[in-house]
Image (cartoon, rainbow, N blue to C red; front, side, top):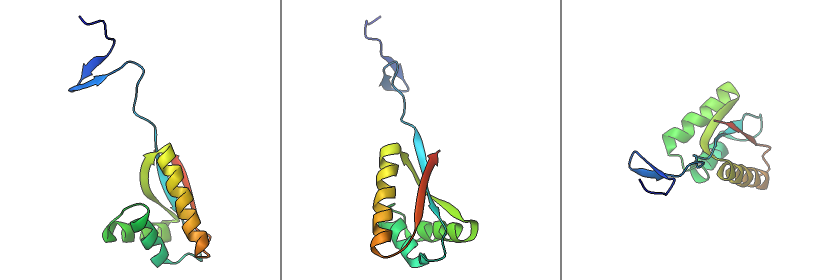
Length: 102
């Protein structure tokens, strides 16, 4: 048996103590000022959604008060939130985004 403490798991070498990073849902929150068109554009440009996905998420935000734009590692989620908020503020919209553990 090799002295290397790694194990083979489903064809991948896994070292003890390594694990998948936690994932976070990025949430868009409804407001009365941000336009639906802007939300769809944001979902397509920042979150790389196609037209159907972007429209579906936008309608969920509009009808239910919030919707999941995507699920990412913490750093990527935080970066997407920061970029989205900056784009919204540049257009004069008060769009709010948050994240929660997936």
